Each structure stands twice: as C-alpha cells, then as structure tokens.
Image 1 (cartoon, helix red, strand yellow):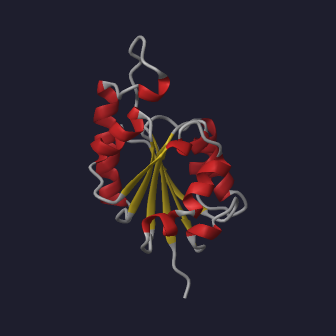
Image 2 (image 1 turned 30 degrees about the vertical axis):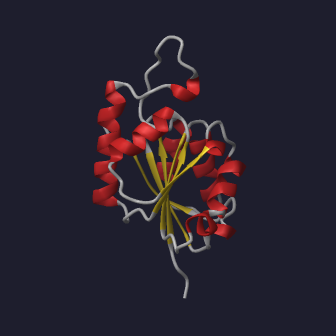
Length: 171
C-alpha cells in the first residue's frame, strides 16, 4: 500500500529591514505578521494537518512559524537558510530519522530563491497544477504556500518525484 505524503513549502512572511541588522536576524514587518497569520489560517482550513516542521534558523522564518500557530514538532535547521534545492532535499530526506515517527505532512519554512526552484524541480515531469507552476515561475511572494504530494518515502524524495497540487498567496 502506497502512503501519500504532503510537502508544504512556505516562504517566510514579509520581513523588515532595520538598519544595522544582519540579514539572518531581520524580523517580520507588520505586514508580515498579518500575512503569516493568514497563511496559518489557510493551512489549517485547506491543507492536511501538519505532522512536523523544518524551519530555517533565520529570525523571519521563526517569526513566520510563530504567527502561523501551527502546532507540530519543529526542527530549526541552519542549512535551510541560504540553501540550494539539493540541500533542502537532503534535509527532507532525513525527516523520518530526525523526528522518529511517520511524518505524513511536512511543512518547510524557507527563503527565495530556493523555494520556487525546489517546487519546480520536485514537480518537474509530473504534470500537476500547471497554472500554479506558471505562477511560481513568475514569482514566489512572501508568505506564499506550495503544496506537493508524493508516494515516495521522505528518504527517497528526489527531483521530479512530487506533484504540485496548489499554490496560494495569503493576502
């Protein structure tokens, strides 16, 4: 029996740019706080319940997670900050070992340009929602959410092994 897994890729909400603050430490802007809350509302209403979260260590991703009010075990992963798609896939491949239970729905909170590249690379060759893929190719705005599905275990997720289901920009 094949278990379908859901991968949700959330770009952090709109960040602020305070003077003298390093990129990694930038907080959310007021708009980002509001939109991260809207992202969480959408996830609870439209997506499968999140079993686990991988989140970049950047302040804006941590604050995005907090504002979504998603209640699931979290691992903060420094490698997701300033990552490549291959790096994020490596972290996803380790999910079962990292969390120690069967994760059916995984939320990853990260940054551009990796989020759009990762979605398009994972969903390449599998068709899926072509309108969503076109939107992602044009722009993956802050707080945007891509939902993908795969029949593969997390440790076997590779490029081209998922299907893009939907793309949502909470505003």
